[in-house]
Length: 488
Image (cartoon, rainbow, N blue to C red):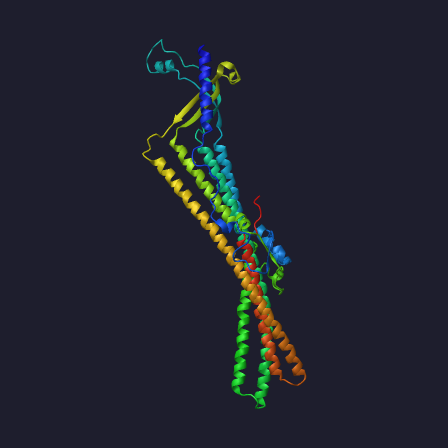
């Protein structure tokens, strides 16, 4: 009867522990608040231009729409070799290992130990005889004593109130934060490589046009000098043209410097030493060509795919879980301690039933009187949650502002490039007409060179405007949160 009562008590005890272990204190995270309101549910962005875009799913690898093989190769190399990106990947592996460690801490801890003891008692009789004592009751020393022991120790803190589960929840959310930060690094890196590449091609084209303009101005200077020799032009005309020639030549120096800086920037972004891309990219090449219409998702899709918003939401989830982790400290903690082992004078007897020993102890610990320390920790966690919620809302609003500003800049720059194309077309027609007049003897060579110089200036302005439009396109893709790859 006593045995049955004892068994029933144990069953009730473990049933009580199991029911308590199902309890999880603290707030259950139900997602981030709606910080965007109606703007996040709209079909389009409020600053979207009327032309040049289309409502469609934007490709994540947006650079493929530019159809520039060198740009694609550079971005692929950067995503594979950039050192900052590799550091972010290492942080992701570290956070995942920390999550795995947190999950392992919720499981029992088991350790094994074994020992072999060999000792000999001193010969007290021989010691007393040598000192002049004669005591027949003193026993001689015994031979070597041997003891062998082996066993397992185990401990398990039962997660009665969900503190460990909340800690795992917080660690999992934090690992997601690091993954989102990695994606954000990829977005920024792809955009930075594209911006540097566009700058390089823009600088190379403007340098070529500047060289051509300098040659024309030099020809004009020679003609003015010839006219002065004939008494048709004065010294002031020669000096004015000389100044123009030197000013144009002076623009070649900073353009050369900028090209070198762009080459080195691209090399470092792709994980290479400065100068590594000189042979590959030094030859001038045209700017990438924009698609006729840029695909743009709706605001809701943008809010879902921007990595910085995902990181802010996961930080909020981690902060919410930490409240439960701190709240669990208000309640008792129960740890099950156990030992199973064997002791014997002969190692062959360790497996016998008589040498077996075991111990099982439930250990209760409760910081019942901590003078408000635990509740202060809870209030800190709640304040941290409120801060994370405010930062999430600000991140959402900033993302909407970023996307709308990028769309507005892209639309205005697109209109500007349209005007620059008209100006260049007009300058081309003027140069053609002037060349016809010069061949017909109706105008001078100086007039023709002036017209051609204006034509080169219009071409330079158009190249610079097209490069600006491409950079605005890149900024738009970045603002939409495109360019990241799923973490492995």
